[in-house]
Length: 223
Image (cartoon, rainbow, N blue to C red; front, side):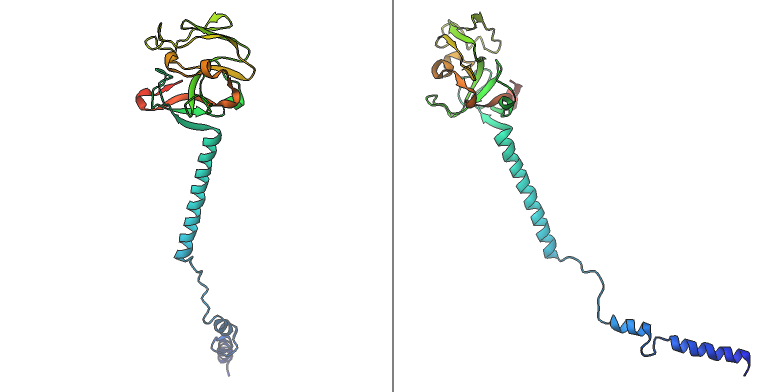
């Protein structure tokens, strides 16, 4: 036998040994072990996707509602003006935004328009008035003129067609405002039930400071 024929015979034998058709061959063994096994990744079912989306929206809505309630309770709240005690700064039916954090950060200031808690004898659920005198000051209202510590207070927010002689409400004899109290009046002095009837108002009865009219748009203004 020639060298060339011998090499050909060896190659044929080697190929036969490597053939996967031979029982026990590693390739054949792996193929049998993998028979019937689907290794393709299983896609999430439609039901799982729907459930996941529902949970996500539920969490989003719950967070949004919680945030809105927290803002309403501690930061901002909308109030509707009822009545004419603040004419013409505010009108019946106006809606204002009230900053409920104001008086947790600083004391009330003269000129602030404030929303008060329900006060016995006021006859209104929520009162909207203006701060005109601060703790320790002596306030007096006489003949349509407001005096603080003996000096006339200039009030540019009053409408001269509303507050005029013989149409400016009852007087107030000199009164010292106690600590942590304010004296409030309505801008419509003849049509307002305020500190002249209710006395000085405690800081604890101040819900917050009204700072802007948001509705109707024709009445929009900063306060």
